[in-house]
Length: 247
Image 1 (cartoon, rainbow, N blue to C red):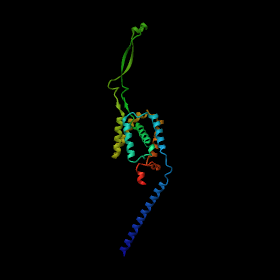
Image 2: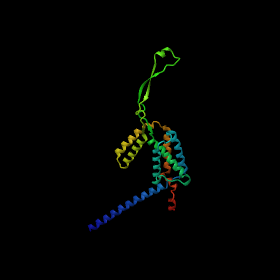
Image 3: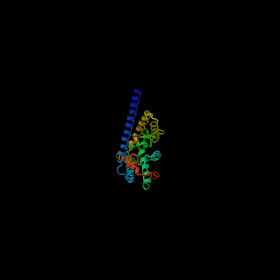
Image 4: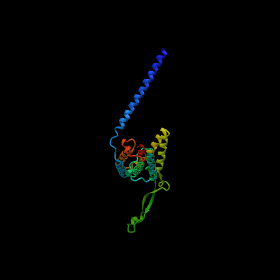
């Protein structure tokens, strides 16, 4: 008798647990359906393109044009990865290639913030003094003819003052090291390399016009968001072949 009661209680407990799980699943489905019902108005593909074009203008005014091939290389790789992994949706055919070009150029300008060091002369301030005799003019006074005039000139030190370093290559190395540390979850290493990248980039940041750079970052962020999968209306930009299969 006791054994039957225990089995009955165990069966009742299992049914209650299963019923609770079913209720939780139903609540989750209800929440998902509620989110799907709040998609709102689908943005026109012209909006991301217009914002991307405005970002290009603001970025040019704030930072100039990208001048190093690494900036275009990283921008191209990031655009290919974003479209390949589905982070960005492809717009309809009339807007497709202009939007891809705008994204590529915007990311190239963005990488000027990370990889915009260029070639620098860190020891250009080091110079050696030299005394130079100034020849006296022919129609000058007799005093200038008797007592010569000397002046001190600061000359470059060969091999030191003209020594240059490509800061962009250093920034690229630190960026790759930071990404590798984050990929393998070496948080301490990634933090150190990211701090070093920030310190190396400070002289470059001082040359930017940040009023325009902030507008550039805002426009790029909104443009990419309107194209991303996180935007509920982004599904209106069909990927070739997917909509046909769904239908």
